[in-house]
Length: 204
Image (cartoon, rainbow, N blue to C red; front, side):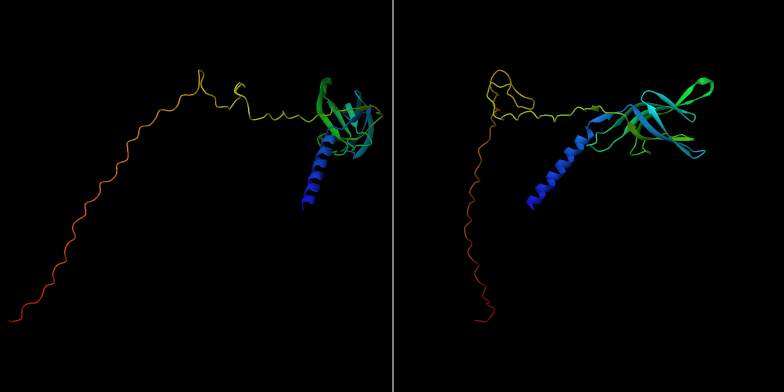
């Protein structure tokens, strides 16, 4: 049973370390993002590519990709892209209808909400440079100091210290009265038992 418990603890620890590594894993910056768009009125789906920091017209929308990231082949796939979507209005004034991240693995997560169009991320391509993410080092705990300290060591928060100028005064003595012994009780003389009454009503 003890060996099984240690095995489970080791597996849990390994899974935590693996999750931490995945959260800080390296990524690849790509120059091009690949999207698919749906026109809800016609039901037509169109695939189109958007270069980073360039704007592409899809229907009545203008799509601008800011970044597009993928993971190295040795890590869990995670393709993401940050985009901005504008819809031109009257008098040349545009309206920002979406600004946020799209996830290829979860198209419906934080997706574009528009009555006519749907846009989702398909892939990122063209990137070869791996961006190394900074690794967080575990915080080192301060060394445990010995509880025994010398008389000249400075006081620490929570310590009980004597007032300045010498040792702490002793508490005043409390005077107590001597205990009184109870007076001995006098013994009463023993009563003699009453003589029995003899019936003398008989004639002599």
